[in-house]
Image (cartoon, rainbow, N blue to C red; front, side, top):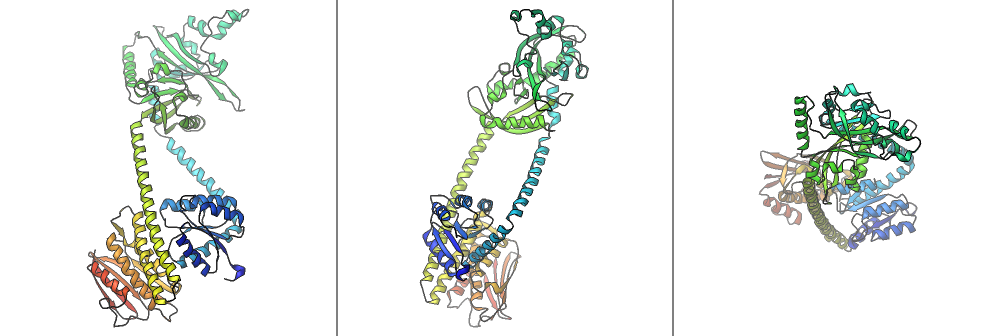
Length: 639
């Protein structure tokens, strides 16, 4: 790499030994290297120095800012490719890295050739990204739009459930639920009106006065009362209540007692009325009064002449009153129109006391926005039901968790009359789940910290061996130190795989060996001209036996890469692993120069082959060498 093309790399690493090793390796391959030992120092360096071509950064940077947070701050200063250097490869770490930069990460001590190739690839990718940045941004926007549409569609589909359940509940309530428009005409009324001898269909489009006697009409109707006091409005001593809502938009009529007529004028019942005005936006976007939603509760136990009807009413009243979950009916603005007796058992509030109150007074501030958005969705969109969770405060000022099912009830004009809420207390389950999650989070944090420290210690050991070899001139000693580092790497790979596996006791051979083979081969300068063929079956081995197998394969492949292809421009290595009738068979074959007849695993003076022999005995297995068209080594042991 000549001076005109030399790239400058900012190396961000808090471990000084590892940083020194990486810097020397990078400079050996022609890169200019600037070091920073903390995230804060890295940010300052990027801000001051403009000619940094790439950043190689550790994820964990000691007690200060970590790597990902540092990268976010750096990318706010300017666009620069960032490659993470780490001991971590857990899914959540990879996901976090990918959300910050698409230039990847390198596992510490995965080999200098892997590191260099990764850096070259990142630089090429960055240059390409600069040329097509505009196209990528437009494509990303399109992908996000499609993704959002898909999410919205799935959300809407999930909300459309259990419609019949909620309709049945409101239709069987003993109280009369109604809605009248601005002209006083019924636009919705539930089945409870049968107490008066009507069906809901008979009253739709009729004026509310049809249920009142003449005395009550004169008592509550503004258009009859106000003209009497034309000369002196101050003489009005009792404000008419039923239509007060239209004057203010937020006035709630409560405790209005009227005599409600039966259709056949047999008898009357005393009705306690609660009503609230409905204000909606018209097509021009102007909010205006559109009618009244109300509840009429029978407060008189007089026989209406239909004994079966009374029994049915009592049955439903008992059913509703004894529900363990809370049933509420609310207006669109949150006014409580109806509450079952279970509200007293669960929350400590008398259902008659909270009538006319606003439900938002009992909702946790953090959950109020969710309730508001759900109500808006039900009233503004073609969705009939919504499920969610929120917190409500009880009379003792304690926050309880509730699972909510909420459904809209529409009138004959398809306008929302009111909303019915089914609330189930899940406080005990929610608190238990919260405690379990906290314990699990603590356990995971401790395990991750231990895992990271072990890997960092292994990385430091490998770096120390590498630094020591750089100070030596004797090639034999250098080779010994490099082979020791490779042995630690093979153990570190297995440890990392086991950490990610749900079972620490055993692991799939297919999951471990292919990556181990690649890691070993890539440590040699001639790895690019050697073809690797892997025929590895998927079967499980105990972790301690897999570690022993990894050491054997490391020694055998190291020996092949060092001696089999001397003075050769290419070569083939085939690695096979199979399980036949509980016997593990490992075959490593090359088409190289062949191994001398005088060498075997029992009497070898070399440490590597001697180690293979010892590890084979530890497996209670056998190993043999076949010398034909290269070398073929067969290892067999019981699973």
